Picture 1 (tube, helix red, strand yellow):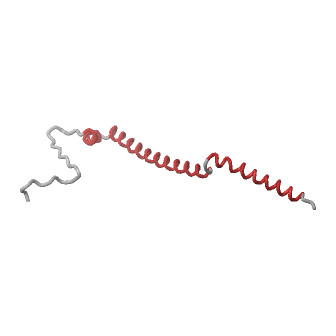
Picture 2: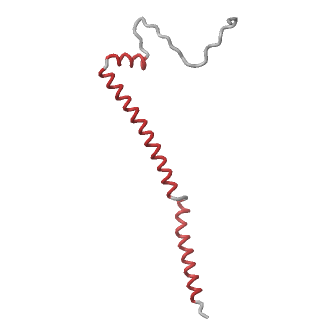
Picture 3: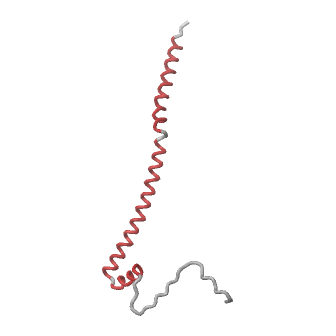
Length: 109
């Protein structure tokens, strides 16, 4: 009885087992698939692109304000009023703040 086919099958099986273990070992060593890393990096790239778009809009708004301050005389006054809280002599400033109205005084209905 010729048992050479059994030896051959055993050797092929052992080689296949060694190949599977050798292929799976780096995967286990790294701790995950490369697709997880690609997905994470793609999400980070998307967040970065959105943040860059927001910053570009902000820069464009600041450039428009710079141009207005350079070209329009009334823009300087508006900027001073809005950003610095400046007023002309003799003006009365009324400031309204959002929130709850004050409680009524006692005895007033």
